[in-house]
Image 1 (cartoon, rainbow, N blue to C red):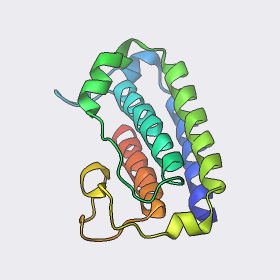
Image 2 (image 1 turned 90 degrees about the horizontal axis):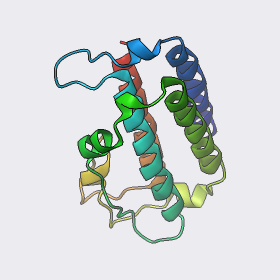
Image 3 (image 1 turned 90 degrees about the vertical axis):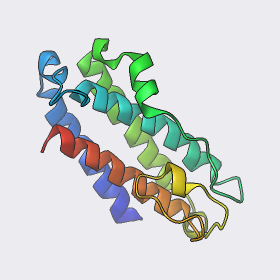
Length: 157
């Protein structure tokens, strides 16, 4: 997990530097009709961080990996990320994820790898797994990072 955390932190640091090179106007451009702007993508990634931060904490104190989902389109819409400060959004995203990396660093190996038969990663994960297959907190963390990188690749193809 040490290498995963290091890669995660490097990704966040590098991406935040690149993101801050964009102007506020550039961050508001929708690449196609119905597609999120970079501002909305970073807003979505903040929402994802908020939801997954709670999941990573709660997973250490329960015997299952069942968590509420969230309606991402609605969350992005009602928070009106297009009207937020670009610099503020990027800084919030960066610092929140560096805190998540800190949290992950202190999760015990036993908790990370403990298989849970009861989970809903077939519904809430980016790369879903069958509800019949056991899931781990480690899988959730790696999935979260993969989801984040996927969205960053939408901003920086």
